[in-house]
Image (tube, rainbow, N blue to C red; front, side):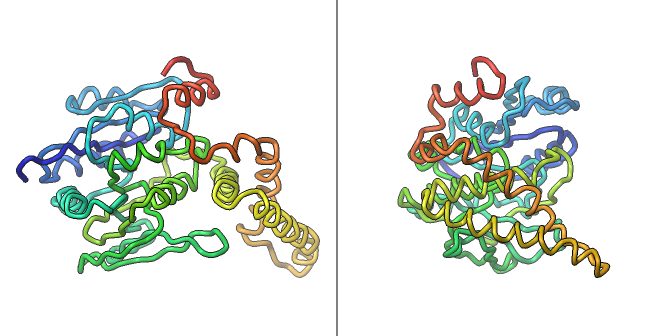
Length: 323
């Protein structure tokens, strides 16, 4: 491709040395000629950084000594990058063919209205022929949509998983990057919705999707609680306080019903599903967490999380110093 615009591949990682090596080997087989690779390590305590420095000299490695979460790390990568296009990846993905990045760039160059393009092939769920993206339901939840991988189908969706999506730098800078306060879950939904709100279209493309292995490594033990917190933050930011309060009332009624019926379920020899048990444990905690931080969450919409002041403030809140 003549005059190929620079693509910045940004990969946050924590304790995924082997996954990251496999991902980088797959990325290196792409036929696109102009890619810079930035790995943002989230204070790994395995040999990730040493392995990268010893075997991948072309990779820019950003290190830290405190955990900050992968959305903050994505922002660090964005600030450090130079590309016209930003390729957001997770460390546990493999490219399905060698022209995938070239296809992404070609589509973006041909259509300036594209804000995000990509897709996930969830091989961890034994799916190999469909790529998935997300659309929002009227109730504010996400629902999967899919296209054929073999036929290279494409459709417009609301959100793409940031384990694999290419974005325009101008779009990302316009929305102020990722909201790092999600930390786990729903941050990519917030990101995609912000890009749509900025006037771009998000495209799920079967020919631009990657295989996602969903590695069990490098995950926090409290991911369910963090997901609940992320879901409520998304509701507050995008739907406001009235809907949040209505949803809180409904959710608490459901939790109360679970707690009242639990003894009878056990008397009958049954057990609660993991979903109901986790809901009763984590939903009240997640609401309490947000009620203590209402002002911060409601003020988050429209903030530029890529600004030096925002980057510094978040890093300091995690116990870090200057970024």
